[in-house]
Image (cartoon, rainbow, N blue to C red):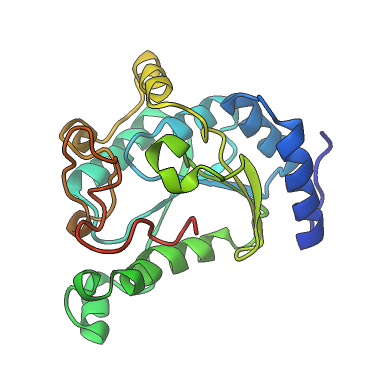
Length: 235
């Protein structure tokens, strides 16, 4: 495919349609290579520090793509250590971003433990807004979304136009099974958050992440006891 020039929403919508057909059956490496070639200098990836396979793939296929990690201020120490391990063991251009307010400043304005009283607002302030800010200037956004990690993502295409943020959202690993992910992880010695082996298959902010019983939905430990299953980044 030819390189996509600076594009408006209509062009990106058309690219999403053609890419969905053109990349049908493509493996993750092909999707990443297509994104790097089509949006040179205008594509960014994001990485949650659980399993870091997406960043490992980028480091071997297109290390020129910057990778953003959002430090919410509420992460487990293991999550921050995984970030440091990833930086030490790969050549990726990892950029750590933070919310406008520190946790202490947020507590002062909204009251302590906003995550317990209004988790949607807390996610909006500490995740959604800073991540959307980091996407400004880019036209394509590579994510590590997988259907296997959440049933709410079953209808998501590998390439879609995110109307809210005005970018293409690209999910190269969307249809990877847990078995495929584990195989790649072991074969390539991918940095993994140790909490994943301690009953935390889905890891977010520490106050809003609980252990999951064997056999339960992998995301059942997120915002446990509340009517919430997504932070808002992928809705």
